[in-house]
Image 1 (cartoon, rainbow, N blue to C red):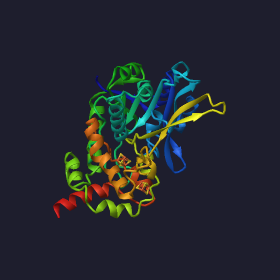
Image 2 (cartoon, rainbow, N blue to C red; image 1 turned 120 degrees about the vertical axis):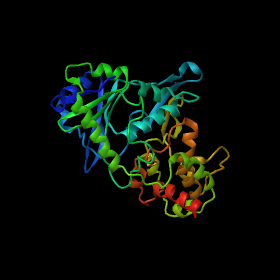
Image 3 (cartoon, protein in one colour; image 1 turned 90 degrees about the vertical axis):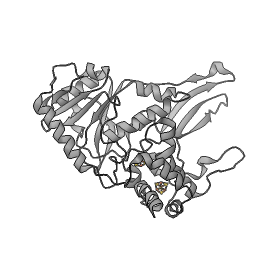
Image 4 (cartoon, protein in one colour; image 1 turned 90 degrees about the horizontal axis):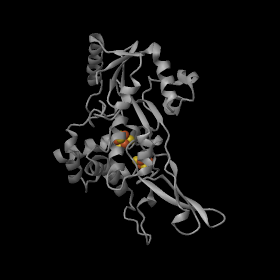
Length: 347
Ligand code: SF4
Ligand code: SF4
C-alpha cells in the first residue's frame, strides 16, 4: 500500500477518528518521564507527546496487564467455571520501532503451542500506530544492534514518521488502510519520500552499534560463556528486585493464583507478572529451588534475552530498548554483559 501524508493540522481529527473506534492510548508526560495512558476524549489530544523519548513501561501492559482475572469459579465441577477472556477495541498511538518488535515477539510467544486466549483476544482488538524515532532516548539503548530501529514487517497498522509539519504514513494492514481512507490523508509525493529518506539516514547515523559482533552470533557466544565468572561478578550487585523484568517489553512470565472467597465455594483465578530474578520464581513442588543462587538467576535472564526466546519464537528476546539498564538500581547492564561475553572469547 502506497504511503500517505497526514498534515499535523489534522492530527486532532485523526485522534478523534481513532476515539470513534474505541479506546486510545498514547504517550503522555508523567513527571519528567513518559507513560502510555488513555486519552479519554478529543479535549485531551494536547496531552499526547509524540516527541516522547521512551515510556517507563512498554505498551505490553495493555495486552498483558500486571494483574488479570483468568476465570471465576463457583461450587464444585466445571459448570461453575467461567473464563474471563476480555477485550475491547483499542488503538495504541506512538509505538516506537523497538516496542513494535517486542510486541511481535510477544505475539509469537503467545501463539506458539498452547495459544494464550487472554493475550491474543486483547492483541486482536488492537490497532497499532507506530512512530519513527530518530535518535536513541539515552546511552542505554542499543536497538540498532538488536535490529530494532525500523518497524517489523507487518508489525503495525500505520507507521508515522515526523517530517516537521506533517507525518509520512506507511500502511501495513487492511485495518490501517481503512483508517487512512479519509480525506485527512493525502498521497505521499516526491518531496515526502525524500523527507522520509533523509529522516532514516539521520536515524542510521544516530543509532550507532555498540556491540562488536553481529547479534546472530549472540546465542553461540552465550553458550560458550555459560560458566563464565561475569555472571557472578554482576550478581554480587543484584538486589533480586525484579525491576528489570517488569520494565522489559519482551518479558512475559507470570504466576497464577487462586483466590477463594469468604464463602469457601467461589473465587477467582488470577495471573500476575512474575520475575525470574525473584528468589521464589523457580521453586517447584516439594520446595526445591533450581535457581536459588543469584548468579544463576541473572545468567538465566541474559540467556532468555539473547538465546532462549529466540530459539522458542524465532524472534529476538531483547530489542535493545535499554529500560532494564536505566531502571536497575545496581546499574547492572545487559549491554555490558553482551559486550563482555565477546571479550572473553577473544581474550
Ligand atoms: S533490576 Fe537490577 S538489581 Fe533488580 S533484579 Fe534486575 S539486575 Fe538485579
Ligand atoms: S532485556 Fe533490557 S534492553 Fe532488552 S528488551 Fe528487555 S528491557 Fe529492553
